[in-house]
Amino acid sequence: MGSCILTFDQMQILTKKSDSRHSDNDWLIVTWFVGPDYRGTDTVALRNQAGSVVLDSGDAIQPVQLSVGCADGDLVTATFQVVNLGSTDFSKQEKAAGDIGKKISETVAEIYVDAAEEVVREGVPAGKVFADGIEKVKPVIVSSVGAAWDDIIMPLIEEVIGLLQQLAGVPNCNGDVLHDVIAFMPFEPKSPQTWTTPPYVASSKSGCGSPASTSVVVTLDRVLDHPMQFSNTPPPATETVPVQDGSLADWSGRWAEDSMTPTPIIFVDIEPSRLASGSLRVTITERIDPRFSAEFDGGGVALFPHSHAVLPYFGNVFASVRPMFHSTMNPGDLALRLGVTPTPHHPSHGPPGGGAGAEELSVGLTWQRPIVTSPGLPVTATLLNSGAIAIPGEALSETVDTIAIPTQGVLLCLYAIKLVQDGRTIGHLLRYIRWENLLYTNADVMLAHWTPIG
Image (tube, rainbow, N blue to C red):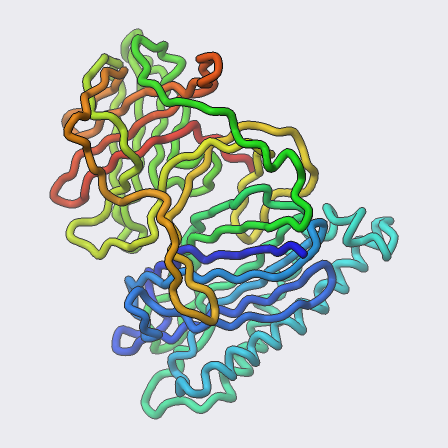
């Protein structure tokens, strides 16, 4: 039997649920459905990088990976919630999280029945709702679960929390931190799909400070019981070559560290400038750290490409605030993939729809993920990319077409992706170099054309 895998690569507590004098104890509750059937609920006490369940604003949460067994053609949904139970005695929190998970599963089960009946009314036979009617029932389930949170699920959760014994003198800051629903379409995703979500913001409670805000990086993956043959075909061998004397058209476009991400960390927009013939207009946005809204903005309106000698590219290095705790969970390098190019979505929309489609080349971002399973302890994982650059002594500079913005400490370099077999150019990459300054460490990241859909 195959499985669907949901990994919370990184949760960043931008603002905790409790007030400034108290800390959070957050629990992750994931409810699984395979087709119309309930398959179980996982409850996980979230821990920060130091291993403590006592959480505060600014904490990065250890990764959590969960999975459920399923057939390759099953529609799988995972409804997840993070709830703070810090105003409750810790010995009672695990039971409370289990009670909340039970309430959620009962409600979602009813939603499945209603969604199936709605699709049947559209003409799909009852026995084939989760087969022939999969494209119709999936959006109904996702939208119905989303609508049920405020009207049905949240009152049930508040009922459970309201029955718990509170610690004397501590305000009741228990409650929802974030919630969402993810759907795995049959045979999807073909390869791991990672999203950096816009920050989730929960409503505040009286006496409990600012509304809780959390940034999440989540990855969906599916292990097929009977893998499709084409998914085992490796992408063609390629090499990245510095461009010299390239055309202005090669520069033009929107660039990001992952061609399909809905929320780029680094975004560069290049287009012809109207101010001078042969010049380019550049707009740069680099999101350094969402916890503090740390952002670098730059660019220029009449910039000309010139050949320039630079150090060779050794791997992505993303910037951080100086000085600042540097999380171990970092974006890695761009990787060329062969497969069906997916449609990116916010996790609440689920992964792309079914259907095998045509094989295409796509460029995606790899991630460092030291995995923590639940329950369990951290296990050693091979990092996909080192966070530092080691330059061999014999390394030489390379000449490449560049756009320099010296007043902002930015250098853009153009590279071509060529097939090793015949030397044919199949695409371009843009290298973004920004020198360190008093606020941020340096950045050296390879960008691809940004073409998100939907």
